[in-house]
Length: 451
Image (cartoon, rainbow, N blue to C red; front, side, top):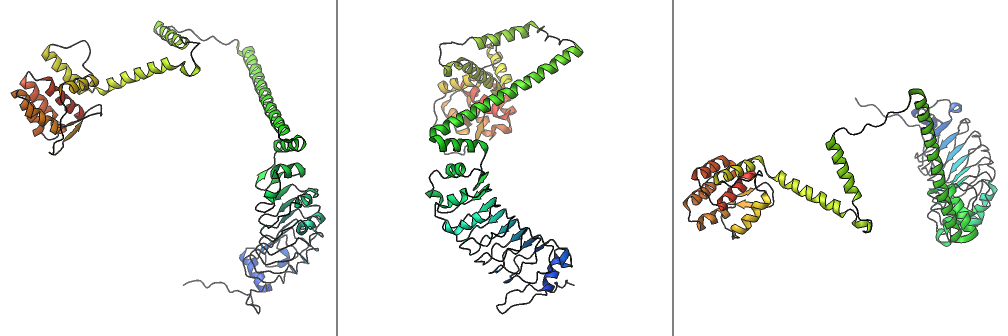
């Protein structure tokens, strides 16, 4: 069985707005896990409830934070009993005038953003007010914010997203003795103030945060130098700051070095002198070390800086190329080449020809073949730079008159894919005895892919 939703004890006024009745306030306190006794609550959330008037809060004398955001309030009233209030949130309402706040002597923060306020007023009776948020309102001129001078305790002021266009507002901000955070983003006045950020930072002496960025000490010193001597003075100040940073870094490095030396001295005093690093015993290692050092030292001092390492780079590239060639030869290819050379009596001291040499010979011996419309049977070999195809072998069959060659090629074509039966083709070729280099190379290339 579904649970029945809690019964709401609010009423409706003539305009069908929610009324702030005592029963409804008590119910909201219980839903927020607060106290049923009004005097014991120090905060209450009344935001987004559709209230049109503030009422029936006289018993909540212990409140320190009151949320009335997102209602339909058009007037600030009935807050005289909340003498302990510290934070009052009235943003996103329909308030046009700031009033009836003099009883809140301990009020520290008030948020009146997203209202219909055209002029700041009614805050002079709040001696402890430090934070004022008035964003997204309808302030336009310096006269509209002149009331801020009657609030000497203000430290944080947010006037962003208004319609302020009078450059004289800077004089108002300059006369606020404790102002340290100011936000006037998205106001037409910003492009009207020459060198906006430098001017604001240099004239507002206690400013630590302007708009969306903090004001650090280095920026303040640079802007103050700019105010006295222009851009040249600012550059000199920034140069001095960089030099001071470098000196500080050097001092820290020397301090760390001193600590290390003291620790080393204590270790030597306690455990004796450190043993020297033994020399290399193996003469091969010594020779290798000397060879590498000689390569490093053999540099032309008269050569340009970007050409000094060309020789080492070329040697490294050549070494890598030779290694790559050796890696291309699979064990099956080497064995096959050795067997062929033994049969022909031309085996040399090396293990066998490289793939690159075979490719060069093939380019000389085998003519370029036209594309055949027959089904292409692709077999890639070890170096992956060329494709051996069945049409090429068919062309060899058509051109050759040597019977062993023709049989060997026909056997390759009959197997279909050479990968399926490389051993059968190999045995056939070896049984035939003398085979021309042309067929050998085609077969070696095809078998190489199989391994």
